[in-house]
Image (cartoon, rainbow, N blue to C red; front, side, top):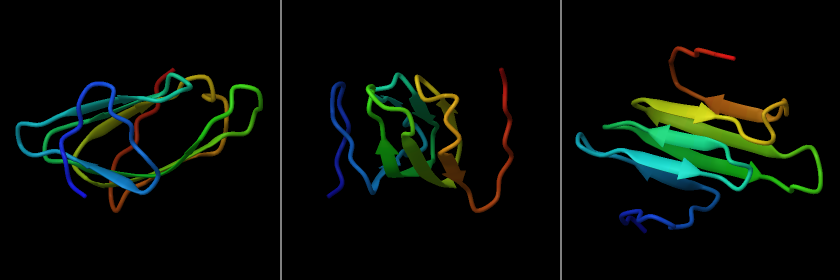
Length: 94
């Protein structure tokens, strides 16, 4: 079901965040990770697992088109973060 996200809206596994030419989206996850989606973009949230009492969460995203920025939060040292793109450039800072 397509709709417009509002401040405080929840997102779920297998949901796609899509924006038009004037749209942007900013998501903050429970571990304080952020996903910013730029104009004319589409990112699918395949999986996001986080438990503050355990290590070993997992995040999987499909970036189908456009631009996005993902910044890790509490599970930043976790090696189980996957971002899949059809073709793209990856920049790592920090």
